[in-house]
Length: 102
Image 1 (cartoon, one colour):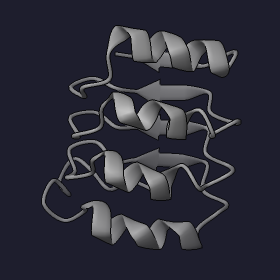
Image 2 (cartoon, one colour):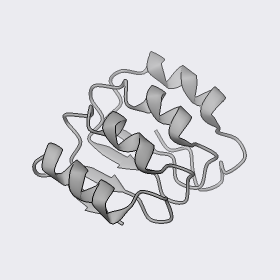
Image 3 (cartoon, one colour):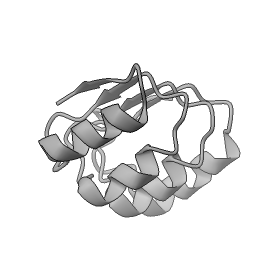
């Protein structure tokens, strides 16, 4: 499911709550949206996500524990977020085989 880049003002944490109704999603692109750490609660409830793009969102280190729940995650795009280098290392340790792009 692709929400960006045109969706910058169309998708926010409140609107993202509906994503829980799509547990089979494997690819989620939230780049350039108004999603923050609060919205990650909804995204990280999806058990099948393998590819997640969060580029240029307000996601930061408090989302790291939630992202670690995505046991099938293979690729994570974090350019322009506030996830620190240490947060990325923590994700890579918790999710072997993860390719994190920062």
